Image (cartoon, rainbow, N blue to C red; front, side):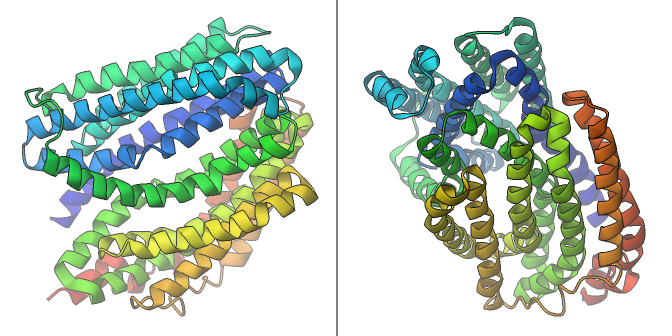
Length: 505
């Protein structure tokens, strides 16, 4: 039975990962093209607009983050009318939110462009982009609603098709239509078109899961329940903004606008590499929840220990190798003149490596046992450290100071999470001792990855395809490390499957 569940889960995880990876890969492939066509200053303005868009998307009252849960709830009950009311209500709310942002931008756009260090020749384009921020926000949030509908009803194959297709159309349009010079308004139109494709295709594919009938909007009890849940999600989501998007705003406020583009490129690389291990979190959460449902807290603690023994060394090896190689890979991607973006990526990824390695399985644990408050507490602790350090470190070391504050913050918060979870029965020792082969295996992988990427960098090739080539030495190094570590990590005496069977009455 367990094998059938896992085999059914694997394709969903794969298609879900593909849907999440498509926008990141598209941005990675287009960034060198856009920098070459737009220039670094104009690309910095575009990056700043995307930061504003991402910030407002996170600060939507927790609505976007809550839709998947409530769509799943209605779908499980076969309540297509409830799903329809939720879709209509969310779209109306997003439309109102976008209209308010548009009005605000009409009033404040001149002040914002004057306050930021935007070159005089780009202020007109920046002003027009700010005016377009409201419509872009509405479409971005509406696309999130369509994505949540498909996720909640298990339509991961369709979701991958919708997301991947929209990214492909967008990339082809950008490459074909964007030329050198003042092309930012056209780029905004193409971005809006990508979101619109997701909305139309996503709602079209998911139409069978909803029914539009009067009343069109959620009932009072539904609004009350959704509002309480969304507010809690907003509190957690706000830390994502404070630990990520606010860094770009600090850079924009204290440094010339070109540094926003430098930061954005490094941040994009770091977040893309950070995301890869996190694709494994949904199946881990499902497994942990099932164990907790059948065997209670002691079973969940035992499951955590078994999973963490594999997760910690695997993620640390992956993180150390990618952190040491990412600075060189970014130079292969964008050219040596943007080596600072590579340093930004390396500093951020170092902090993210600790965070993912330490908190990944713990996050699954606290959610599975119904204690998400521990996750919120550690997130706010990380945010407090980050905010306290951001401005002084930025004044000392510029854009590197910004990301150093973030790396220190997430590291400190992650270690605090370990302390918090002790009261739930999780003990970090001896369950989190690294295997004896971990250090030599990781050192070998680092040497292979760095040596290979240095050779590729010396070839003088830059762009998306050379970046893919730079990934080959990294994969080779990780494969060598895996060959050394897997025999220890898959020791039958510590296998989760074996131990679960032994403990099951």
